[in-house]
Length: 431
Figure 1 (spheres, rainbow, N blue to C red):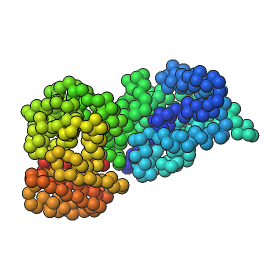
Figure 2 (figure 1 turned 135 degrees about the vertical axis):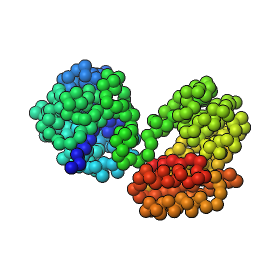
Figure 3 (figure 1 turned 120 degrees about the vertical axis):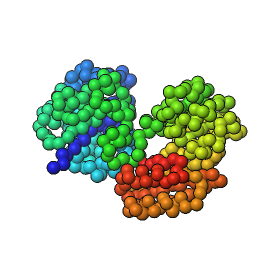
Figure 4 (figure 1 turned 60 degrees about the vertical axis):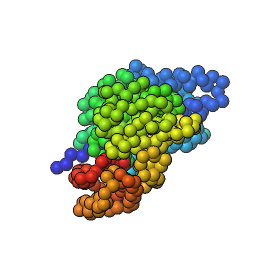
């Protein structure tokens, strides 16, 4: 008999990027003369509870008392929260649709604003556990239901004890109340979610730190929008690169290391390199960088061995004219290549512009340009009963660059077969 898995997910600063009561305060107290002081008090109460320094019940009571909110403010909050869903949750909406019976939202927040936000991600209303407000006849929020266990200290533990779910339970959250589930022994593993905020006191106690929901899905071999979490993609920035360029790469989720030289310790694991103008890339190190996929050069890339890069399947983007605008343009080309496989404006690869196709998987196959490779690729796909949604091929004198979009489920045997094609240079799955 297969053991069922359940995924216990927090709402504030996990499913959404923000703390909802903090946001509600900014809406309801917008015209209050002491609003900044009150905002600060509410945020402090939130953080003290999340770090385990103040009981949750005391923190909640103090915050609600300060809100001065009503139902109209709630509607404004809901609109705001729908735009503040954490990026990695938003792009993995299909996971929630496929696992609707196993996903539970368990939060110390309030159903009045949680339900409208998470319901659009196919999460069942009966699987949403949260507090509820008490309002007056005219819609003013005056209190909350104190009988709800989630309003109490250790509320999540009490709730899960009552639910008594049978199976493997995994908890995902950013705060102390989430860790308490692990401490109580009610869940198998606790994943500290740090996409929005990282609390040191929680991170150090977690079974695993997950900078995104992609990481959680990857670790547990679950269906996901991207095949490889971006924070696992190492991007090395070398030299005096503008902060704006670095910020673009960081914002897209890549793991950034900014160094003055290409240090030996990064050679085996680096996936991307962004070089300042006049920086060099040692050819011996380059040949050992077997995971390297793209190089961005904020200047003329003539100092880099283009032939070696092409032979290794490394795509180069450079800036011949040293245009100030290219401090954004070059990183964006690197990002587009990593995200979609687009090689537009590449220095050494066939130029291919590609849209992202929804509900499909994108495979990239880089190979030596000899006859018959595509026939071999398609034979392997047919043998694995893979349905092709789209296929693109561009070549130059030395390499072929193939993109295959498929909408079928696949297994690792398919990847192994594609990698084994004799003239393969690089193969990867984008999403």
